[in-house]
Image 1: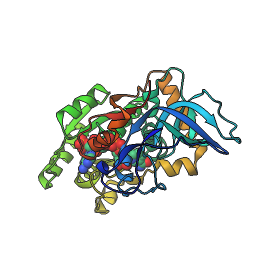
Image 2: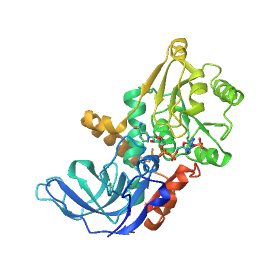
Image 3: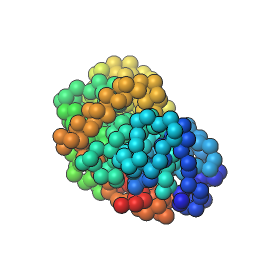
Length: 333
Ligand SMILES: NC(=O)c1ccc[n+]([C@@H]2O[C@H](COP(=O)([O-])OP(=O)(O)OC[C@H]3O[C@@H](n4cnc5c(N)ncnc54)[C@H](OP(=O)(O)O)[C@@H]3O)[C@@H](O)[C@H]2O)c1
């Protein structure tokens, strides 16, 4: 079978699509014929050895994928050959076939296509966990989403709107903001892409305050970090919740007195560990998400798909900050 393979950590363009042996599932393993796999920022990091999880070599990145069960190990109880499924295991998806433990699989709803299913677990799972368990978001509260036109940002818009919040989307270009508007954002803020100096930071804070009647925003959803975090924290409402999600820009240092002055919480969000430590809550979250999907409250949105041969190119788009919206790799129809 063909797979985009990482044999050692290195630059994204050093990894290639290769022909390798088909895997054989044993024990609780399920072998899935992959139809599509979502591309996410962790793919940028994991192939360079910069991610917190380091899979054994050789590995294919691609932490989430959708497809059909091809064969099963002798201890598998939950799945049958032919089932339409979504797999999530941190890596393995940019391949014609992927092995997944039977407990890291969920059914693909009949009304959901493979491409939509392939982008469902990581970003929707993270967004609902962030808003429900970590921010305890209430209807009518205001949410600021940074990097809002990214893969995670778009799902955060969908989930925050489905939970009844008012959404302010912030991003670095008008094209990105147009997508956020089309995906449901109520208000938009354009921030600087390359020059987030003190003046730009103050301008960002001032715009957030202006959109919230000077009250500040109740919840910040921050997958970006860097010079964007402090001005967002400075524009929080009393008792706000600042969700630390990721650092596509860089890891910022924050003056802690701001948390005191705002009476606010700075809250870490780590969906991967949450799945391991609180599996039943995660399962309940996904029941809510699939209900929202069936009711038309959330609609997975993929801007563009690429064939397996273009996987490196697609990962590069995210690394270069050029992707607008979510991208997926389409491996078969
Ligand atoms: N905590 C968790 O459980 C969890 C779960 C899933 C993902 N994450 C993290 O969330 C982050 C976003 O992931 P994603 O898949 O949504 O990524 P993505 O699609 O590439 O979007 C990230 C956004 O970050 C912004 N950005 C700012 N500086 C950047 C830079 N130097 N390079 C690239 N992008 C930059 C870009 O928006 P603008 O240009 O508009 O600023 C971009 O649209 C990643 O750090 C990922 O690891 C965390």
